[in-house]
Every structure is written in C-alpha cells, then in structure tokens.
Image (tube, rainbow, N blue to C red; front, side, top):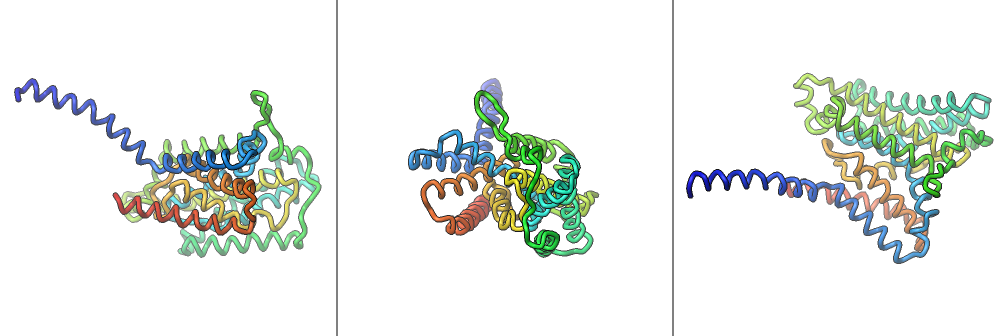
Length: 336
C-alpha cells in the first residue's frame, strides 16, 4: 500500500470511528433500556385496557408521580455518593405537616411553604452531619431519622390529621394550567423544572463532578484535595430539601396533612432511582433515568389498578422490580 493510500485509509477510519463510538455509547446507556421498558408497558396497557391512554388517566399518572420524582432527584445524588436516605417518606410527611400546621394558624402561604422546605432541609442536614461527623453508616443514620420524623408527625398531632387548608395552598397540587386545550397539572411543571435544574447541577457544575467523584472512589477524591464530608453534607441536605418540596406538593394535592402520609414512600423513591439506572455502588446515575424510573413505577401502579389486580400485591411487585433492576445493574458491571 502506498503512503497516499495509507493516509487516506487512516483519515477514513478517523472520520468513521467517532460515529461508531457515539452509537455504541447511545445504545449502551441504561436510560435507553429503561425507556424501552416504559414504552413496552405503555403499549401493553393501551392494548389491554380501554382507559390507559385517555388524557385524564395520563395526567393523573403525571401528577401522582411528580412529588415522588422530585424526592428521587435528591435520592439520586445521595446514591451516586454510595449512600442511601431511608428517611424520605417520613420527611415528606413532616414537611407537609409543618406547612399545614402554620396555615391553620393563619400564616401566609409563602411563609408556610418555606417552613415546610426548611423542615426537609434541616432533617437532611442532620443526616449529613450524623454520617460525616458522627461516622454512622448512612443506612443507620437515615433509618433513625425516618423513625424520628414519623414520631414527630404523630407527637405534634396526637395522631389526628390537619384539615382546613386554604385553597391558595391546595392550588399548588391541584391546579391545572390550560395549555393547548389541555389541563397540565402544576406539580408536573414543578417536576420538570427541578429535573432540569438538578440535571444541570450534576453535569455542569464543579460540585456535580465532585458528587460523582466521591461515589466513584472516595479515598482518591479525598487525596486529591476535595472535602468529601462537605460533599456528603450537601447531597443529604439537598435530598431533604427536595423531599420537603415533594411533601408540600403532596399535601397540597391531598388537601389534608395526615401523620400517616407518605408511609412507605421511601420504597417508591428508591425504586425510581434504582430502576432508572443509578448504581447502588455509587458513581453512576442520571436525572433523566430517575425521571423515567419514577414514571415506570407509577405506570406499574396505575396498570395494576386498571387490570383489577389487588392493591395488596403492589409492594410485592415493587420489591421484585427493585431486585431485578439491581441484578441487571450487577450484570452490566460484570460484562464490563
């Protein structure tokens, strides 16, 4: 082969290689597989039932998983650092309850909402300090917070729900924005906004890179000069804040703050994150995957109801989905 032919061959390979690599990267992304699962579920339910594809049902699904997804965005950051936050369900209830108790005492809606968000932030900050300064395992620290937050819900209310919330507050979870002749739920708009903000934070800021670095190799990250404790305190605080936002929206949607609210929601939130492709080993995960994972869990819940399956089977199915998702994640890591 002449030098000219060799150069031409090298140039051609250089031009075609990026194209092939890009396609391999796209096809290898966990988000694609999760989206295909969601698509398959949608096709099956649309053929099996007559009501799945109705606009009312679709928007009910989007509204119902919005606060789960918002909390899952924070949980995603925690799991990327190889941690876990089991307190999200109880924090969601406590944040909504904090806002509700102020509202029935005549406090303005903005102040009450801020109080709910601050409640979530404080619990998240407490989790971060227990893990970094108290050297507690994330599982133990957040398990304790879960019981403490739930206990506060029962203690301050005596087990009774808080009712009589003003309409201005309930609109946060119940109002539909008219767009193109359709009523788009306001919680859906909040969810998309926080999804965009969290994704930009994770992928376009120095702190986002540090979150992935801590989960990838904490010791190497610390040796490079990054304060890993500060990163962990930040992600647990953000998890608490986002969960507080989800709790306020949930309470506004229900129109009542009950101490039993969001019981077991930590399972839904963790399932959304894991199903969305975030690795429990840390270092991997995207907000897009979490968004799709949350949609899958809500479509699954909705589909079981439409097919007439007893709600008692829901947790069993959720547990099975989580186990399968973790097994697939381990298989993907092993194939590397």
